Image 1 (tube, rainbow, N blue to C red):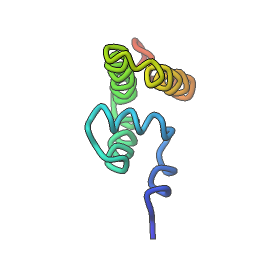
Image 2: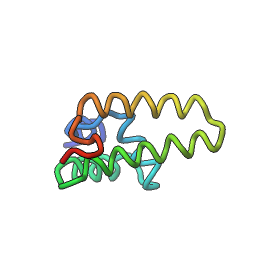
Image 3: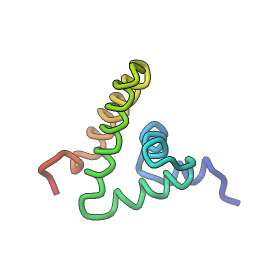
Amino acid sequence: MINETDILDMTCLSRAQIEAIAAHEHLDIVPAAELGEYLMHIHHGPQKVQQMICDDITDALHLDDLPRARALYAALKDFLADHPEALRGNG
């Protein structure tokens, strides 16, 4: 039987990136993983994931939640290193 960990491990996104999508879209972790995986395989989808993470960073900064903003920045940095196609102007 496939469990939550298996589903998260099948995506091309890290846990932090999936959690950012979940927060942005107000989803539980498994639907967020499914959405993230879907977006990574459509035209301009990686840019949408990048924008979600950037939006979450902005929200954290507006709430003066610096630890969350730093964690999201690290997730964004890793995301762009792993998925350079997400950089604006590409794709």
